[in-house]
Length: 69
Image 1 (cartoon, rainbow, N blue to C red):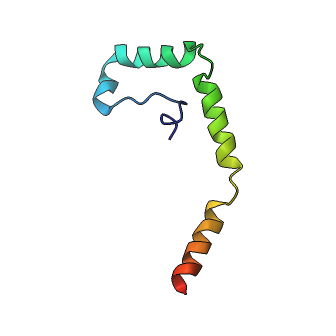
Image 2 (spheres, rainbow, N blue to C red):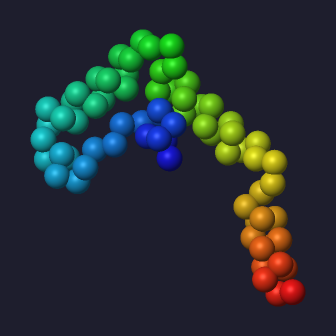
């Protein structure tokens, strides 16, 4: 979810053995000066998740009640 919304970089399992790839990913996240940086995107996504119009618990209850009818 974070990568899709611009808050992280995804590394595949086999890339974790390559220290150059890891260093590049860390440097990209730390030094990105674009309009929407990784930290801003991650904070924005966290705020959106906290302020959802309906909680996951309420949504689950609604679906269970609907299925029970």
